[in-house]
Image (cartoon, rainbow, N blue to C red; front, side, top):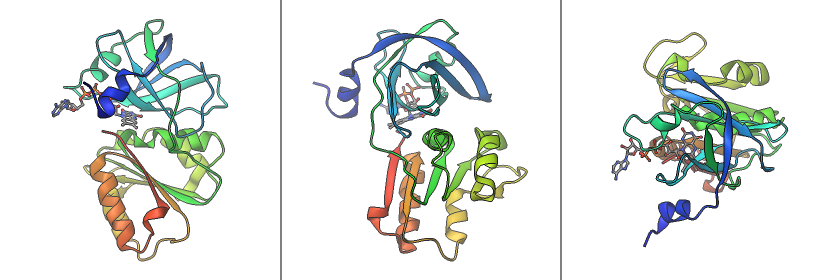
Length: 226
Ligand SMILES: Cc1cc2nc3c(=O)[nH]c(=O)nc-3n(C[C@H](O)[C@H](O)[C@H](O)COP(=O)(O)OP(=O)(O)OC[C@H]3O[C@@H](n4cnc5c(N)ncnc54)[C@H](O)[C@@H]3O)c2cc1C
C-alpha cells in the first residue's frame, strides 16, 4: 500500500487541460501556463503530471489569482521522471492537474521571504497579488540566470530584494550563499514572520540560523520542495 506523500499524490483527482504556453526562463528552468480552472490563494500548489504513468508532482503556482491563467515555474531534474518530459511539452498538449491546495499563504503583514532556486515561485504569486508591502525577499541561486522574475522583484521591492549568487559574480548580487548573507546580518527583526521555500537543505539551515538569532520557531513557516 502507498503511504505518505506518494500515496497522497496518487489519490489526487486530476483534470486534463491543454498547455497554453511554455517558455524557457533559464538554461534548465521553464514557465508553464494553463487556463485558470479554479480559484486559489497566493502560495498554494497544484499536483501536475502528463499521461497516466507518472504520479503527479507538486508545483507552487507562480501567477496571481487575479490573472486569467495559472502558471508554474519548474526546473528539470535530469534523472527525474516527470520534469524532463514536462520540459518537452508543447502548447496544446494536455497536462493533468489537481485543484490548488496548501497552507503556505501570504498576507499583508511585514515578513521576510527566503527562497532557493524555484522556491521563489510562491513569492512571485504573493508579490503579483499585492502582498509585497513590508516584505524583504532573499533569493539564493547558484548562477546569475537563477534569479527568475528578477525584473519584477526589483520593480516591486527595490532594495528589499536581495539576490545571493553562490557560484559566480553577478551584477546586483551578493557574492555567496543566502545562508552566509543571513549570518552576516547583525540584527534581524524578531516580531514578524519568516517564510522559507525551496530545498530541504536550505530550509533546515536557514531555520537554524534564524533561531540562533532569536527568532521564535512559531514565526517560521516552511515549504520544502522534495
Ligand atoms: C510542496 C512542494 C512544492 C513544489 N513546488 C515546486 C516548484 O514550484 N517548482 C519545481 O521545480 N519543483 C517543485 N517541487 C518539486 C517537484 O514536485 C518535483 O519533485 C520535481 O519537479 C522533480 O520531479 P521529477 O519527476 O522530475 O523527479 P523525480 O523522479 O521525482 O526525482 C527527483 C530527484 O530525486 C531522485 N530520486 C528519485 N527517486 C529516488 C530514490 N528512490 N532514491 C534516491 N533518489 C531518488 C531523482 O534522481 C531526482 O534527482 C515541489 C515539491 C513540493 C513537495
